[in-house]
Length: 133
Image 1 (cartoon, rainbow, N blue to C red):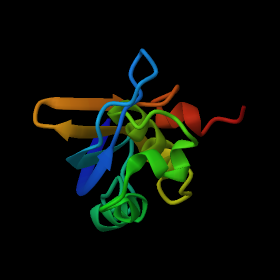
Image 2: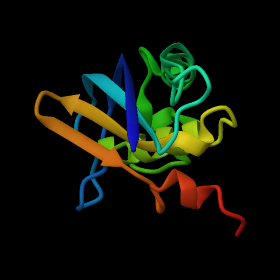
Image 3: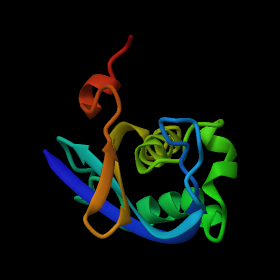
């Protein structure tokens, strides 16, 4: 199995709704987002995915978030803007891109040094995702 990872970062604020229903104070992070792509085979050029294409697609998703308040990101559909939800949302947006969909394996979001959350989807096997339902 081959794996390729690309990353990008953006600066944004968020405010999590806590278990008691209250919001924590708005605070800023330098978010690092890594997209991981996997598959058993390489193409004729010897690539799983093109690094430049994969990073450009990841940046298409994340660059509009620079300087934003993640609580207002429409793609989250009102969900608490946790690192876990950001990873899940970016994963699904990447997986919706036809040129990358077959190889999207996971997305990892670093909210602060030593604090990461990953989302791998319900099926992380590219071969199984390509099988007729």
